[in-house]
Image (cartoon, rainbow, N blue to C red; front, side):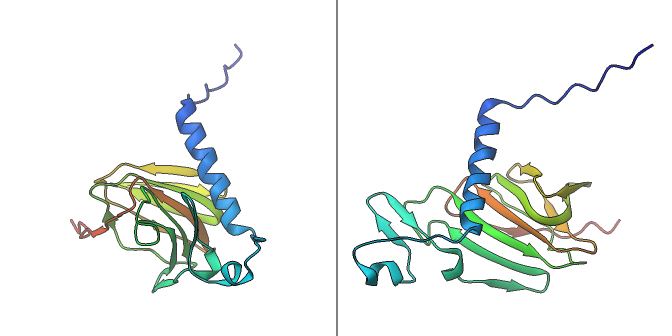
Length: 173
């Protein structure tokens, strides 16, 4: 009797398009960007440059938030662009580190691994993630990430420009 291969999970077109858009945005942030303008002073300033309805934020110019476990660089949110309806950032987790268990009460989160690997927990379930993997965390779900022997870099997207993070106490039962 021949075995049937496992069917592939169905991915809705909108999920695929959103994932592809996140990947494209992540790649563009991690690649050097050159802007040629007639106004050299504008091209050299470190503040985001607004052109009509577009806001450009350069990864090298944004604040690095440092934590014992790694860093976060927020490249777009409503603090950078008051009209932003999304938050986008790059998170780096050092080897053998874990960030705090937390939740986002009013924001879904999408994480996409661009370097290294990690394990990500949602509720009480851990999933292994490697380069190219993407996970969606619904709002209100406690989650965190940990690394083993290698660091991990992920791009993170929230469906609001005003992301809020609420720490969650670990259940020690």
